[in-house]
Image (cartoon, rainbow, N blue to C red; front, side, top):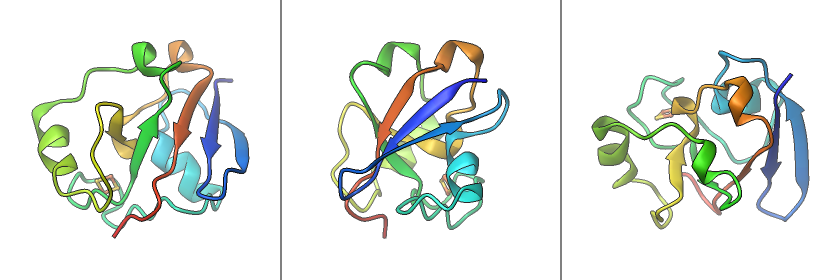
Length: 107
Ligand code: FES
């Protein structure tokens, strides 16, 4: 099963097995990962699931669509080139080893 590493605000690293078809946000919420609020539940309207994808993982990611890019403009922390909304990162076997860093605040 694909593995995702979440780097928490305090630097702690948490590895989760995330089944294909499940979003990085859903896995975080179901496992009580601190710092991914996901207030809208994944319907692309809150930006409180913002993560920074580690440089080692960027090439594995699907391209964000316009709606995601627009919503990222309203993220509570600085938007960077590696910013993504974790509800839009749906796991595939090719994404195994994904590393995401949780920003200092979400709202
Ligand atoms: Fe609201 Fe991702 S959970 S935009």
